[in-house]
Length: 180
Image (cartoon, one colour):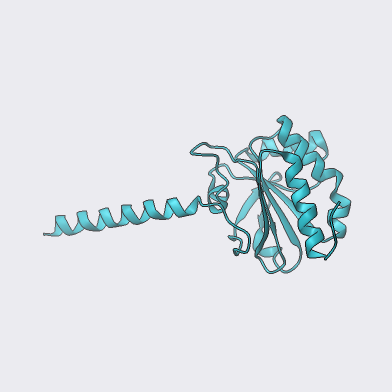
């Protein structure tokens, strides 16, 4: 009897874990409360979303790989707009499966001035639905998270320029202005 109860308990737990993993990789949508997370940046420091809620708008972007053409274009586009983003109270943070040493090299090579989080186990990617299929790689997706912790905009596109435009549109809407 105990063996069959344990087996049923194990099957139930395995089913629940499977169901949760399906929901864990669902893309976060506009209006949803952004899942809280923390991660290690390029310098080994800890970055927590909770520390920024209520203080700044957060532009959280996931990207496939450091130092590749599209990822470099996106990161440099953000870098080039950083003074305006800072003026608008936007905090930028990038996330990929790359480790902190790869991020550090990427930041140094291109003079990036925002943190990159090393999500080597994919926990942040899975919380936001950003994992590319079952690979150890993110797809290009970004989230604008408002002061209240809710997602204001989701951009799910392979085009780096679309993410920068999406951020500009979200900030224009937030400030009641038409974007360019």
